[in-house]
Length: 286
View 1 (tube, rainbow, N blue to C red):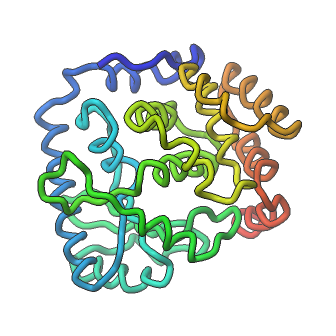
View 2 (view 1 turned 30 degrees about the vertical axis):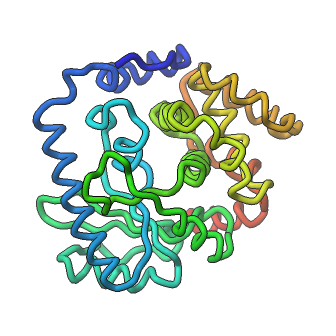
């Protein structure tokens, strides 16, 4: 599979990962078996959640592999990311417990997800909020989950992902949540989402409140994958603050990568509520 060109500094830094993504040989029997086992997990969990009347969607990783990537076995994944409404989060935790999953310890209340483990299974990250850097009404999460769409390549129809626009919006927000300290894989997710669903961008950018840093994330994705640059024409002009952040990002990407301080600074300055985000960070790390 031919990948779009990745920014030179990042292509060097993540050369091994990118080479694996572009190599058909990576679709080994082991990779295929791991994905198929993960799908069995999703079928089991999805059925159990549905039996309790809990709406859910699978985000990122496996969901993107099957719905937008040209070869679903090439995109690696470390866990299964499941999103539920905040009001059903406790019920979903009980469902996972009944299925034999457990947490490694007492989860931190500030986390955007709780991670559950089961022997010989991929970890499950159960999400119920969009970001710990700033709040969002539960109705917005409910609308996100309600966009659930069956994956066309899943014959059972039980694998559900957000609508393309909602999924793209979340992928962009997730990169911000990590202060953009991720490999270029997330920008490739954006590229393949827009390749498969070219008309979803406007809806994606309008899914979250306008002041959220989704447009900024798309501009960052275009720094990593220049082919996305053509998608920026429909965006409003960046603010002076966004221009400054993008200059900082570009400089750091080409000179050693983002530091933890860079990442924190970006999250605070790009936040719709900078003081709330700063306070959240201080409470977690101070």
